Length: 102
Image (cartoon, rainbow, N blue to C red):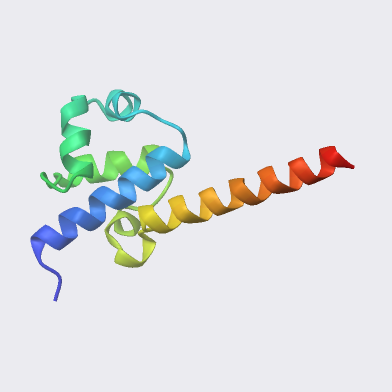
């Protein structure tokens, strides 16, 4: 059974992932749903839960359904994404160095 704290963390990570995928700042997201930037920070950090109307607003601007923001399987671990991106960039750099030597 999921605790409230776990649900807050899941919601925060899902919102952060979708916001960053759009390259939006917390301030921009806050403006779009008419809340304070600190509210977005607190939600993403799992410090604050949201009212239903805020959840619906977040889902609408992030182009998803409210229930999708609460699903743990939608969380993409930050560290794994960072590691994959770093490996991809390293490989790209090595290929470019090799190609320029030819």
